[in-house]
Amino acid sequence: MTPLAYTGLGLDRAPAVRRDPLRLAAMLADPRAAAVPLWRDLSLVAGEPPRAGVVAGPDARRLLGAGLEPVFLGLAEAGRPVFAVDISAMEAGEAGPDLGGGTRFVALRACGPLLPGGDSGLLGYARAVLLWHRRQRFCGACGGPTASAEGGLLRRCADPACDAQYHPRIDPVVIMLVEDDGRVLLHRQHPWPPGMWSVPAGFVEPGETLVEAVIREVREETGVAVGDVRYVTSQPWPFPSSLMMAFTARAVGGRLTPDPHEVADAAWFGRAELADFDDRHRHSGEGRFLAHPGTVARLLLDRWLAGGMSAIG
Ligand SMILES: [Zn+2]
Image (cartoon, rainbow, N blue to C red; front, side, top):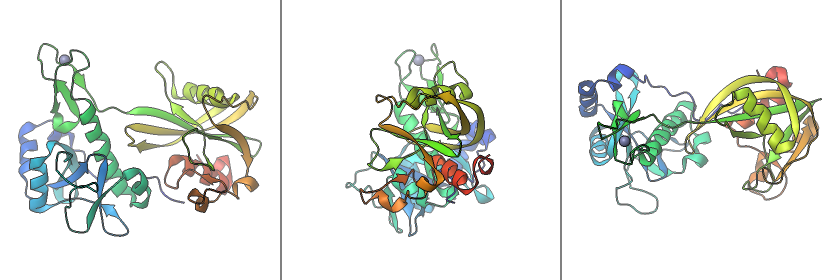
């Protein structure tokens, strides 16, 4: 079973360092400092099979000097500081700047599940926080500019009279495996490639609990009423800033009536039918396949296929 992508960040986030401007400056000047660059929408990987592209030595200092407001991600082994840096301003061809050493810039969404767990966690964290910086350059309260603070996990309005503070944005999403009598509820969303099916999911809305969000989403998309909602696990999803929170639930009523505005289709599937789903159909344009290995949707389904609801929690 493929482990969850974008988890397992192996860094000490070192909040005491983050909040101390002098220690932060020393970390940035440390010759061992490493840089995790993001160029426009692309992340850096190295080698084959790919690993996270982490730039060290003089090259790292060059990137940290050239990029906008480096973000302190934390301390790696032996206290080595690791920063994320947005180098989008660097001139380059379509494939991004050539940083040498067998590295290349790639779309993380395609490459993330191929990386070792902690590596995709590192690139996902860097991507999520740097994209947030790009989108929070101005204060939502007064419209003035904001500035990075606390090593990059805060932005503050530059006008002391306003002093609004902004934390990195995280959008909560519930995603749920709904079972009824040995079958699971799957749906298709309109933008998905032909043949792809997965479990329902949706953004949490203001004023509701996670359990209420699970119940509402399933009912809105499919007409099915659910209960016995249980938390399973969660997965950061840096496209750009979601946190997928996974649950199981049981159908307790309602009738399957997919809402065509919400979903392209929805249906119940038993184990025998799911056995015909095949990842090789992803590129063939024929047959059915499930969400990509490494996603929490796939984890829910693989565990259910392996042993039912008792194998999930
Ligand atoms: Zn302001």
